[in-house]
Length: 148
Image (cartoon, rainbow, N blue to C red; front, side, top):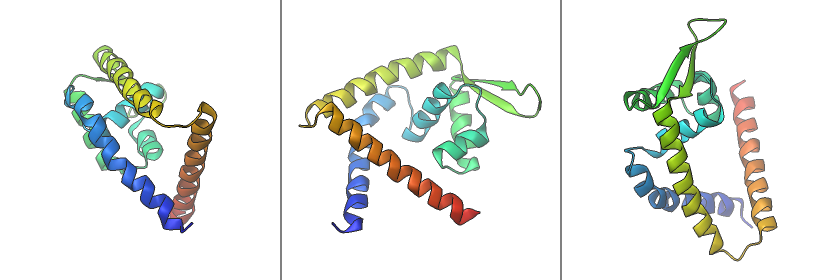
C-alpha cells in the first residue's frame, strides 16, 4: 500500500462526514470547530484556552474566536483561576450543557446509524479506532518534536 492512500482516505472521509453532521449543528447555529471546542469543555470542565488549543491542535487566536462565539450564545461560564486570578477557567453554562447533551445524543444516533451499515464487528471497529488514535498520537508527537 502506498502511504498516501491511507491519508487520502482519511481526508476523503472528513468532508462528507462534516456535511452529514452540519444539519444537526445548524439547528443550534454551530460550526464544526465550535462544536469540537464545546465538546472539549464538556469533557474537561474548568479547562483553559491554552489547554483547549493544545488538545485540539488549533492556534490560540482561533480558539479565542470560537470561545467568543460560544460565550455570545450564553453557552459558557468563565471563572477566575483559584491560584492565578488572571487565568480563565471555562465551563459550559446550564444552557450550554443542555445544547451539548441534545446535540451529543443526535450526533451519536447519526453515527450509530452510519456504523450499523458497515459489515464490521464491534471488535473490528474498536481496532480501527485504536489504530486511528495511534496515527493521531504519532502525528502529534512528530509535531511536538518538530517545534521543540
